[in-house]
Length: 320
Length: 271
Image (cartoon, rainbow over all chains, first blue to last red; front, side):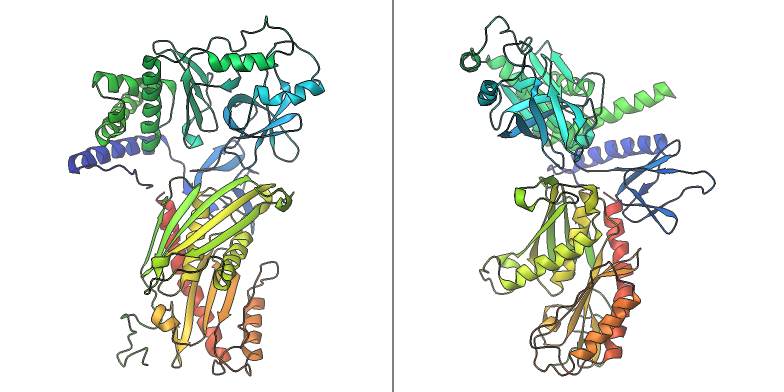
């Protein structure tokens, strides 16, 4: 197993092992799928025709894995789900990315995919909120919307024919993210859900779980383009405005760090990151009266692991 | 110098056809997409894979497949005498190329068009057979990164000293001046992806003969389509290698590589 790299004392080590073993036993009960490595043959019954999906190929009439992972079967389709890999986009995914390049009519975003994603100027709402053709002037003012190294949130719109992806940010909820922390975790820890935008009211914090493993924790902003009343060509003005807005209160900063640390702990332990689990982890740290920095200590990791084992056991019991 | 004593044991206590102990571990570099540490006895190599990611140099982008790059380096502390080695010397450029071509052959590059895969290998401890250890480490790192591959490449070396074939040479045996071969095979496909023979002694008289043997060997393994190549040092191969011995050596590799495959398998399966 890929080691969890935290320094534990003997009792903590034993407790963590016990919790992980408990989780493992649950997994085994729930899942009978075979795991394969590269070039292993995947057993299929010859009678019915099958469709070979990702991570498989054919050799001498046998289906062979080309990845290390778990064999998944959906009706006729057989594919291999990798244990660890880069993000594989699907249309409609909500992702967070970082601008690496401002090019002709488009921004290039780093999203942990094999290519950079493209966000066209025409597929995002202008800050003035008016629907119109993009002019050459808009193109010149692109840097006033997003600059290099800005963190941007968007949705996967479609695939280009070369395999690259296009994003869209045609909504008030998408756009530039400011005043917060960007966390990068392995993308398999973020499951696709109904909601990826969360407003944690009790903390005054926005949480965006990007499907690509980029997670944004930042100060809550109400409807991003409230500057609709501002007229054309004042993008410059809006840019300075957003920079001069009032400072974030200390309390919000603390809760941002607390939430971010909770996510860090979960990703170190390799647990799925969902709103429910994050909130539970935060609650656990507050009930224990732990400081924000103490959340990354070994004791808290062990406690979270034990808590998660307990939670999942009770869940399976309820189901069974 | 005597490399195999009368009891039939080598300098480090192995039998001539015995490999050193293998140890593999994946996930050594936290920031990389995939990484592995591979040990063959005292030889220790770390490999990290980044990608598939956007091509850094646009002009190198390939429209229908991924670009594979490899960088090999040796840590200053890896050898007995601590020496600062210039980066990009002939030896390391050559080994980078060897690893790149071997890996490129087994990665399904056509599945990741317009992207780039970087493989970085560094020798932490050098005790002979670094080339094969690097290839084994790179394979594990690629598998860890979730990059689709045809097969896991396994590699091992062997030499010929005092008319005895020896498997998996260590540093002392390697520097004794006999001929040695490094083989990389795809065990499930039963194909050779790497076949390298190196020696830096004089005489070019028998250069043709071993070459033919290797060629025949290559043909036997239906390597058409798989890059089989042979690097012969300018000065040639030592005269006293005999063709049958060499072929025998190569067959022995195959057996041992199966053993290697098993180890690689367990390394990956426990991830």
